[in-house]
Length: 94
Image 1 (cartoon, rainbow, N blue to C red):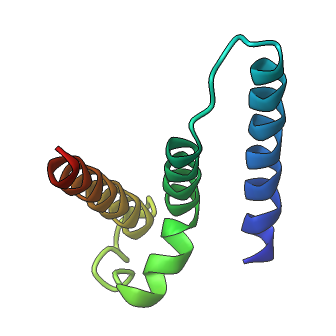
Image 2: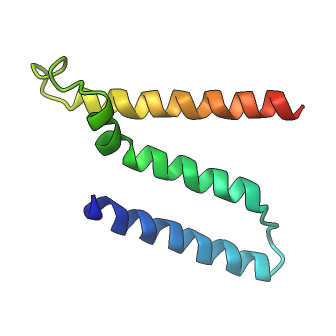
């Protein structure tokens, strides 16, 4: 798990520093709520294969395949859930 958290933190930190530098130069405007949503979605996408394997044990269904299909399925499921939550949030705010 630590092996995932170090690069995740590095990616988020690099992007945050770049965004803050661009914001200081008045090239972009940062909205905090969308920034937090983007960080949460990126974190979920990166952590989905390791976290969802404990919640959804799919390895026995996809064991005969050469590719890690359980990881791919967990990332796709996480992406669909994120899109559903964004759609429901947009629908409730409108």
